[in-house]
Length: 337
Ligand code: 13P
Image 1 (tube, rainbow, N blue to C red):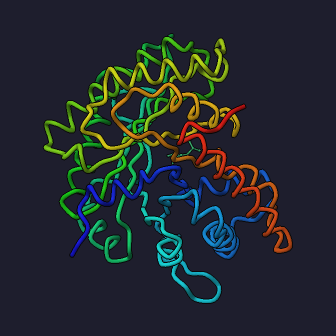
Image 2: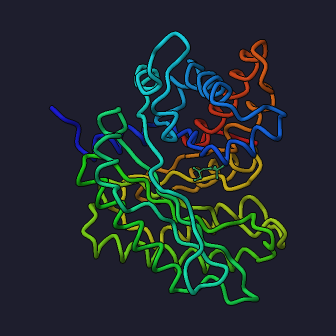
């Protein structure tokens, strides 16, 4: 019996667990490795991902799904077990980033559209055979009020692509993670929390219009939004305010049929990402489950502890487990400062 989209989404939103975003492209992992002085070779990428996926305590207890990059889905542990199998054996769902990155949008200076729809049906069918049961597509929306950005034209373009991607995923038995990220840490991020709220509200409204227009089954998808935060160079607010504004914005825009919301961390500190998620789950009163789908906020401490050295693997796995556990508690609303 094959799993339904709803079964897969429910597994991804298991109580007290969340998603490890380990889908850094070869270019993005370069930035992470540069910070710890590790060369970006295939062997080092394999070693780092093996460290994460074989961190049994973290994976079995706190991780419900792992987003992989194309290369990683095809890799194995040094003793020959395919990463997708290792992840499944730990009780988590393997997933795959399928977008081809954000590229300049023609005639919209300063704005981007995420590409990757051409040939996507065939790629999804191959990824399914390789074990992936969910996918991710990230759209990026930059805030630059002085230049009138973002424009509704660019948001609509990204929403259209997200919905076409989501429909193709569902056609092929794969749960789409729909990720429209309103960026907090761009070069000129001086905007305040109200601006983030307004842009996120507009973006989510346009995204859900497109998902409806393209017949996407909302019960078989996961939303991966940003939280409502000021730009990193803008006037800062309390963690409580971030949590309250985020819940308020999502309640105003996200239909109750969506089973789960899994946040990105987007450049927040590890602790802030945990605290925000915990407060939101303590506030409660919303129809979806809320958990994490963090990249940096789950991996920063782990990467640093590892620093490319084999003898550091146990310490790195312990650092990963600690963050995963704190976020697992936050997903239950049980984490306290
Ligand atoms: P961050 O949590 O580092 O933002 O990464 C999550 C992700 O998958 C972005 O697409």
